[in-house]
Image (tube, rainbow, N blue to C red; front, side, top):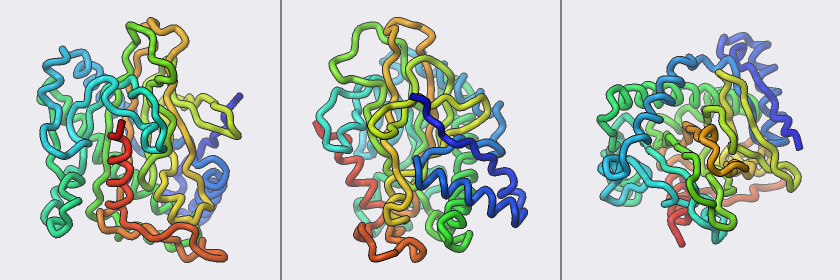
Length: 325
């Protein structure tokens, strides 16, 4: 099955041309209703920045396990620092009992410190916890911080596009992301040295938690697949393009009119294929912890089908589910 994810050039919207904005927003709205995924070009992030992050990422994951383990979080913050192979499972967020995912990861949270602004909410402590940044290899920390900032800017621009696409004022989401707690994750999928457990994938089937996800990836066997009409189809963006998909929050905001689509990362057919080694870097846009996720006025129709919830509570419940089992 071929997955026909639309490719959308957002440069005309970013240039500020009124006609270009309308055209881009219409394309995004169509994709959001039908599949919830787009391949994004004209986004403004240089390929050199992505390539540096990929290179430094591979160097980090090549380190001995005991060296990488030094950067594992010791406190309650679960999305910081290094997490080893097969220690987390995203299928659990959907209540599925499946083996842990065949990937190892390095997580970053917000760069700006907003912890004091949410000190009155005990559950927000982990959302604004300090980062655990490896100091080896040289340049890894700088490349990841630069990429986080680039994704941060791009996600704000995408939310402007989403607002227009949903027939809302362009800056509707802007006040809700000034103290966001977005996560950037560097996922390494090594070539396997032994067969996976039954049903074990590189990343189990799931929908994303937040408002939107920006994904950059290297090319290799055993990659991203999206569910369409009960079947799974591979997604292979061209060099320089990014994959963007809606998360559960955006589905709630649009009253189910836009879709947060199931996706997964499969194991390669040839388990020992060294060329199946790959890295993906995802930026998961999570608004301010106390931002209210409720039906947009333009999407109410006959009534809201989801109860209001804060961004923080929504993400916290998802993360708790992912650590069960």
